[in-house]
Length: 269
Image (spheres, one colour):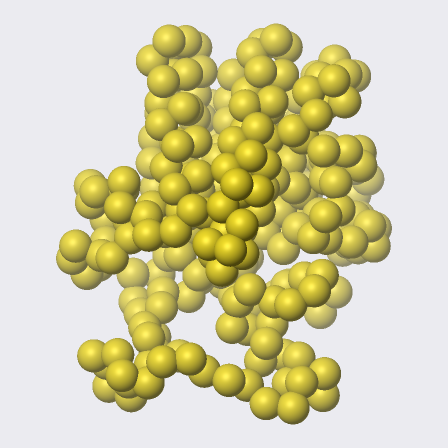
């Protein structure tokens, strides 16, 4: 079975690629390397001991993407591509609406035109906004995002629901992540963003190796034991396994399913 990964050279995508390859799947990665590095593709092959196909292109560019579907004929798609920095989305909302929505629309069009009907979508727990209860579950209101990044996820989720309603042959899994952390045990892959990190752990590692002088934690008046915010952290390898499990679920023709991916346990920063 051949799986096409958009944004597959990124943090979560690269770990999922290894999980797929070591589970016997063929992998095709499409990535514009906007926030990832070409060396990651080589490391995926090195760690897994398997070959893969790589195309450097923008998924939002249908004219460039569609020939890849014709050439590779994937059986399913896992969609990671898109911008994901909450702060940047607040500062530049039009960029996020344009790129995240166009990327998903271009991908779905290429899938439909090539009769590829199974999709795992990288969504986010940001769709829930301020939690109505703890722990959150999939029945909570998923239309309360408080920033443009989360709102793009809400819109794309709705687009995929509409697609499944109009095309019963489509099978889609919406995966709402909490806070990925960690790295591959080989030490060869981890969260290594271009530019300023968006998450806590990369800041912490940069302090550890001397790239930054100190770690600044914002907020000390949260209603928690130590005053810092509480987050549900999930190891990136567990997240990768979740994608493979969702892919297997789609093989049973489930039309549309939604899963939160986290541990269910919060930890203060």
